Length: 112
Length: 112
Image (cartoon, rainbow over all chains, first blue to last red; front, side):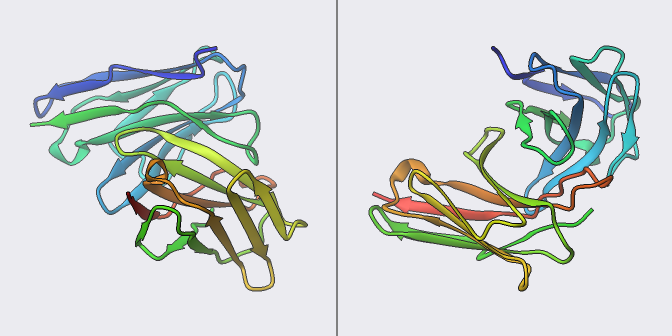
C-alpha cells in the first residue's frame, strides 16, 4: 500500500512554462485535495475533488487547473508558471469530507 | 470553511518535558483533527476528536476539546527529540462543508 504518491519530487521551471503535477492514491478515496505551503503561511487549499470527474475551487485557485479523470489520480496543472507559484505542493486524499486526510510527500517547485 | 489558530507559534522544550499546544476556532464543528509535519515532509494525521468528546488519548498524546470555548489542546507527554515538528489543528465543520483548513501551526523544538 503506497498511500498517496506525488510526482515529481522537485522541479525548476522558467516563467511562462507549463507543467503538470501528478497525485495518485491507492486507498480508493473519494476526496482528493491540492494544497500549497509557503513559509509563514501554513497550508492553503488550491483545488479539491469529491469524486471522479468532479473538481472545485479552494482558497487560492488562480493560475492552476485540475482534473480527476480517474478516481485514483488528481492532476494539478500550471499553464503559465509565475515566480509567485514557487512553493511546496501537497496532495491529500480522504474517504469522506469529515475524515482523516492522508498526505503525499510533497513537490518542491521553483519558478525562476 | 474555518481555520484553526494554533498557539503558541513556536515552543522550545527539553527532552522529557511535556508540551502543550492550543487551538482556537470560530464556528461549530463536527470534529477537530491534529496533524504533525516533520521538516520537509507531508502532514501526518495524529488524532481526531469528535464534537461530543471532551478528551482523547493516543499513546503519549492527549487531546482535549471544549466546544463552549471553541478550543482544543494537544499535550505531548515525556517529549522526545523525534517529536520536533510543526503541529496543526484542523477544525472540521462537517456537513456539506468538507474542506479542512489549516493554520500556520506550532513549531515544537525538543532539545536533547
